[in-house]
Amino acid sequence: MTKKVVLMLIIIILSFSEVFAQANSSHFEIAFQKISEFIDRDQKQSFKFAVFLVENAYLDGNLPIKAFQEDIDQLSSVIKSINHQSLIEYSELDKQKIETYAAIFKVMTDTVISRAGQTVFINMPFMYDFEDVFGNEDWSQMFVSKLLATKKGNCHSLPYLYKILAEELGETAHLSLAPNHIYIKHYSRKTGWYNTELTSASFPIDAWLMASGYVHMDAIRNEVYMDTLSQKESLALNLLDLAQGYERKFGIQDGEFILKAADRALDVNPNFINALLLKAETQKKLFEDKMLMKSIDDPNTLMQQDEDARTLFLEMESLYVRIHQLGYRQMPEEMYLDWLTSLQEERDKYLNKSVPVD
Image (cartoon, rainbow, N blue to C red; front, side):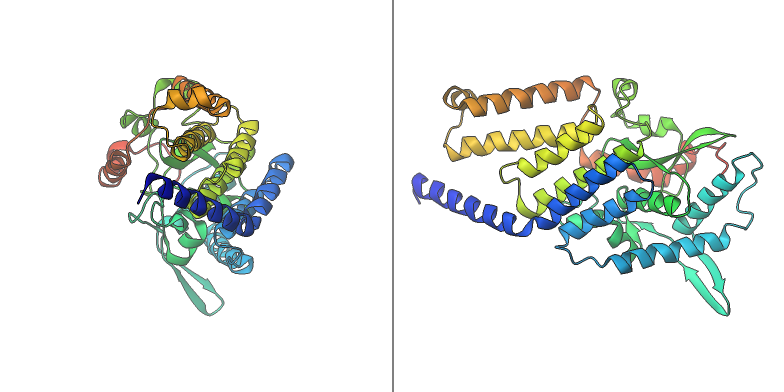
């Protein structure tokens, strides 16, 4: 097959996939608009609906909202049923809030038996799913709906569900970022800020997050990692999930939707590392596509011939410099899995002994 024929096939395939994406991306556009509105309104329970919109878009509108809500309602009922029990010893003024956190943690990480009249309910704990941790084979592995259906999740869906449940019960739960990772940060009058890790059912100290060597001090100083996300920043994280789901389903296409989502997230926080990374990686792939389409192997040659490509490359280069200056260091997936395993096997080593929830 000649080079010209191969190029023509690539053009045909890209054109077909673009038409397919346009015909099937309406759910993504609707989700983008709704989540953008949530960001403007900054409402507490909007995170739950944003998560639903993201997952429903990827599933072509086939995620029943009634079933999604019923699963959350059932868990909320179980949490309420044990919230009056003495799960912890705590007497500070924020006792009610901390007891709610303890009940959520208990329901998510332990077997809980509850009653409703004569009916006995047994709620099994959620477990970490080590299969396809990053959703490389199946993006729905990252979903809260998948977690609810299978009782297995990861460092994306588990903290998301925890936050949803906390907000259903009238409390606040802050998401926090580390390389390849999301966890929960809480504040108590007795302990101050502390970490809640759903992947290992523990409360690790900050040193655990630093232990991998991939949380650079610059990233902490610039509030890139190990800081609390505001409600707006959590919703912006949903937009990035939406963009990643779009890419998994349709490819990058012309990059418009993905870059739009990244830019909207950067409107919320100009130093939002996940948005900067998504934007830079998208621009990199768009530049590589231009090289492929024009059968050019040398980036400098393409930039000399195509002013748009030159602008794209320079902006991408600037973003990568900025990302590095903010303190981001790439953590290999294999190392992350080793790190996660060590947390589960050596949990006592990183345990925060002062946390009131136990």
